Every structure is written in structure tokens, then in C-alpha cells.
Length: 72
Image (tube, rainbow, N blue to C red; front, side):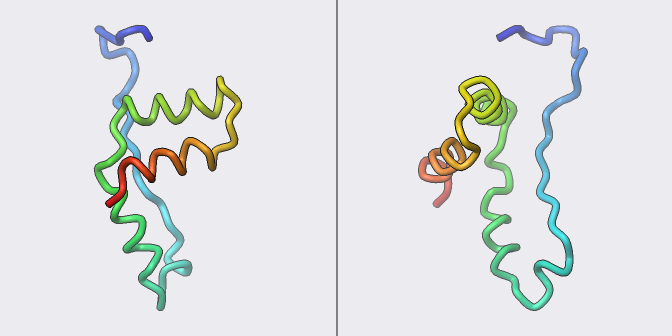
């Protein structure tokens, strides 16, 4: 992995985006998604993206592994 020692690329800041209609009247998705807040740093995102883009894993596989290790 090359280091961006000249800050050529912006920081990888993940955010959660949900349609209001999806959570109105049902707070469960908001609660579940809020548990992920602050758990994605740049290294984690690179690792997950690599697993999908380079290793050709289905997105569910690295996601499930990440969740098992990180949430709760």
C-alpha cells in the first residue's frame, strides 16, 4: 500500500445514508445503523473494499466477518 504523504487524496470518511421513509415509524434500522457509527476507519474501508474488488468476495462475506469482530 502506498502512503499518501502529500495528501493527494481526501480522507475516507464513511457516512450512513437512509431514506426517511425507511425509518419513519420504525426506529430499528436507525438503532442498528447507529451502532456502526465510528467503526469504519480508512484501514477498515480499504480492507473491506479490497476483499470485494480484488479478492472477488461477495460483499456479504467480508461484511459479516467485520460485524462479527466489531459490533457489540
